[in-house]
Length: 332
Image 1 (cartoon, rainbow, N blue to C red):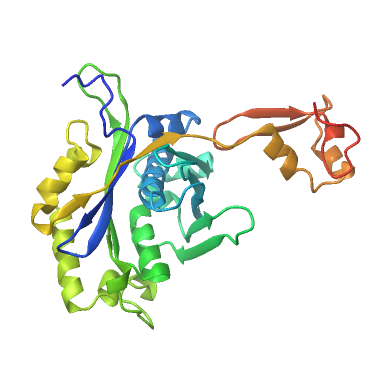
Image 2 (image 1 turned 90 degrees about the vertical axis):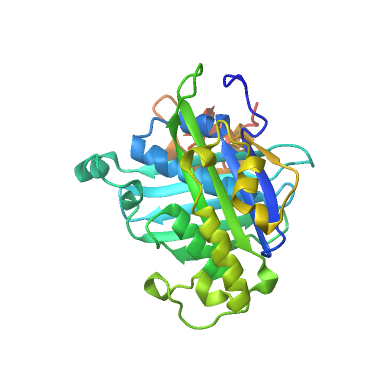
């Protein structure tokens, strides 16, 4: 096999189901898509790691949304990493790739004060994890929020599903820079997501056994379901990092090694690409709520209003007379 050629499982999310355990899941591999996400910015290594983990979580979670829907993940904290934001855009048509983008806001000086040995997650501090789903025009967006807990972004996502959705969820993730023979160094990421089917999850009330009284899988599942869930998690714990990142291990091979006794059944893979939806028209629309006086405060000494996309770095310039609800000129 020539490792310099793309693999069929690069930049894909493969849904699967374990029929013997009433568990569903996904295997994600992000290669070029993640490299493009990170190439839009010059992040320090620790911030790159956080963005990589968020992107991988977003790909795994986003695969379930419907065509043309948008899923967003946000982590806000009081540490040097103030905001991590990702968007997953469902395909416009069946068979088309989904699109993903990500961005981080951070205080470089505060990060430097903590030293190079600080764990990436410790840069976030105290805050919250949020999932937002936009179903399109005319529909009320869904939003769910839980406190940060567990010591990693993956653990925060697991807490979110247990607390807000009452669905036992587990992530096993790996990401980082790697190099295969004959190819340049690049970012690779891979992971597995397990979820117990919701119909088997009784509604839990009161406090949970997790950090700060939050719910965990053991608070939600009954005896038989908990046994199946624990068995699948023990099998998942045997996964090695190179199997998750997958330069030579296909997702189907990984599933067979891990869960061959659980009756794994796979579905069509979902391709994922980097993609940003910013445009001059969208910037104009966002500025349409401002008066000419407000637009004047945004105007540079050169007589232009400028805007930069936080996700892809695209730069836009406008004639201030064409902006706001008091615009005196039509846009070109």
